[in-house]
Length: 420
Image (tube, rainbow, N blue to C red; front, side, top):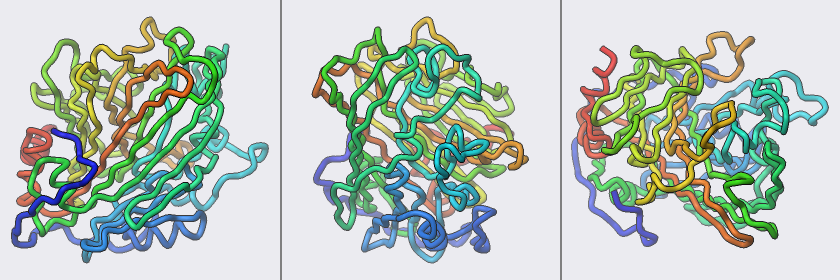
């Protein structure tokens, strides 16, 4: 799959009759996740500034929160449904960010606002962790998201009708005591249907409500010391939070290679009833009923992951570039333990959050699709970038089938039958 060219060359789209067997539109209601994009934008703007990027032709749009690290909160393919694809924690958005000394419960560790693409830095755990201070146990009471990735806003440094750019300079110290002086630059660009078709190398029917966007995330060493493996390296880590459902299935296509195709030693053993592995792909339940996580090593990843939501009729694709020498590069491990090899990590992750009681477990439920960059040693002044693409198609299985086969190498029927 080739990278999207900077010129976003036009590509013709097919004309196929509109779907007549799409799922019915849910009644508006924020708390049950059925709010429209327009309703979500109106809600969010009551509590934080929101930038909206929109494709003038299709009506597809993105809602972006500068105060929350320039994260994409939600998106829509436009059209009559005005569906909103990102997961939002409405109660936490209403609560907002309290002064640090006044935070209670989960807010002491992280602010779960949601959003279908946010920027974090890795590793989370391990001897070079960014989420644990030195010499404390790997326990939740000591886990804390750095303010840079949680409560500090990113500055808007440029904007057009279809793109927006952010920047932030900061310092971070890892568990080993290494201090990093750094700059993060983040650009978000909405993609039209022609650009989506070129990106995925597949025709996009006119009948599909479609939204796609690309984020380019750049990390620069602004200090006077080199970043090395011995003192800890940093990866760019993109996490997307989406709406769970009883039939939602994550699909991660596999490349041929040596070693196990999937790792599940994070927490919550998924077992055979939640994780299926074939020669072609990994299937993972995203029903929001059990907390568990999996990772795909760079040697077996294709740089692509996605999901099929049959109840809402939404096919989601998340992709990033996979370096040709991926297996030779350092990739951070984030499990909450010291590692014999802290750079034997994963490129793709999927997470299913199970929170049946929001009072005792206030995270979700939701599911995540995640991509990571390698963690490269950077000399002072050097930079590295991670490009992540997200696309949603909203229609019936009949018209989505060819896209699923082209992107994931499996049929809609294979996806829906993975756990039968």
